[in-house]
Amino acid sequence: MENGIYHKSYEISKKSYDVIVIGGGTAGSAAAIASAMEGAHTLIVERNSYLGGSASGGQVTPMMQNGIDGRIGRSYINDVIMKKMAEEGYSADDTYGNDGWFNTEMLKFTLEEIFTDYNGEILYNTELIDTVVEDGNIKGILVHNKSGLSLICGKIFIDCTGDADAAYDAGVPCFTGEEISHSNQAMSLRFMVGNINIGKLKSYLKEIGEPDILKYPFVEIASLWEWETPLSGVFKQGLKDHVIEFDDGRYVQAFSVPGMPGVMSFNCPEIPKIQDALNPDSISKAVIIGRKMIKRLHRFLKISLPGFEESFIMSVAEMPGIRESRRIKGKYILSEEDYAGRAKFDDAIASTAYPIDIHGLMEENKKKIAPMKKGEYFEIPYRCLVTENIDNLLVAGRCISSTFTAQSSVRIQPTCRAMGEAAGIAASYCVRNRIKANELDGRIVKERMLERMEE
Image 1 (spheres, rainbow, N blue to C red):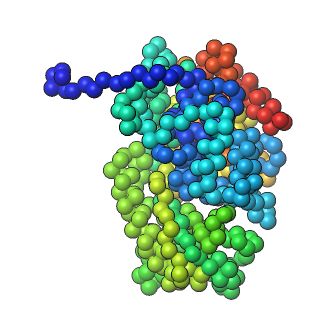
Image 2 (image 1 turned 45 degrees about the vertical axis):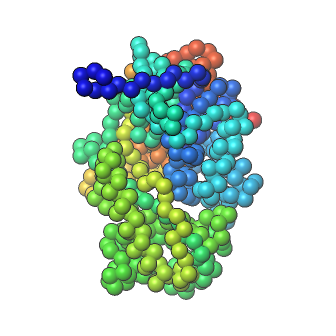
Image 3 (image 1 turned 90 degrees about the vertical axis):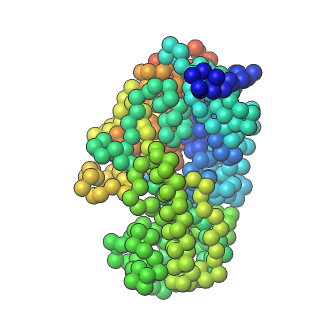
């Protein structure tokens, strides 16, 4: 006891690792798999009891595609994950060749099995508390779990927390939100509905004039208030009848799920007026509001959409869908000018043609940038994953070094997996060759990623 404050001691872990990945979500699981594949002794520290993050616990399915055909937009790790899921019946291609349809629950199994097959280690239900930094290096991370506080040491650290928690704790300069208002993108809370008669639903959609572009059992429904479509008309009637509220139907989208007959995953509701993704009170309020919106939406679906009569809310995502929060200031800041100019880099480690996709802010705050034409894309340099401040830190996922607008294009799953793969390859290379992560030539990482695609 000192000055009335109790200082609790911590244990130093007996194990030390080559690479420690903090956060086993979309980018983190890819980073850890890539690191382990390259031979590094790799640990994932994950606050939940599963891998996959927003893709599994957040129920973000199907995967949005990056809009690039061929090898340029692909990630080896992403291919490994989706191939294993397809072989086991937990993912599928639709008739247009989109392979992004996957089963969120089984993704947890797939990621865990791939990583542990390469002798990767996982600490579940373990929360990052702080980083221990000396002379520009992270010596270890202070974590908390059922054993209490402990310090885990490693050589290279990869921050895949989504919120850049480890980087921020280590003193790395960070940005959050839109550059003027500092508001974050709107959050969503996804949910799944079971016992839907998909055939009956598809027949009804065809009857009212909705385009039927997907073959059974694939189905997608979508509605926005500004659309003049038959399905949007059904939602507008629900608003008129006071079955749903305006915010409930502002953005509605749902998809069938491979390996889950009669189930649809809803990419909504979008939570209104809460745009602080780093405030625990705001996040808690968003979840509470979201559950109320889900309940109203499901009641409307049962009343208004044939096929939903005997359905039930099967699950609500274990975490809100946070599209953007903290972003590091790296050696290079990816910008909307890079998007507009279709920028290419010698040290490019990921490519995307995904559009600027900003949710929740008023239209006047959104910059007008022409979307990509077929064959166009821009690249993300390795320098966006490293910072001048910490020598042995890499950052991957939605919290890389970028502007608010550019981040809205690079935050989707295939791109995050590519960034994670790059971070994992870089970390392992740095350990083997005793190189600082922020001094590594990113062209080496790019070349290894291309080699992987040829194997």
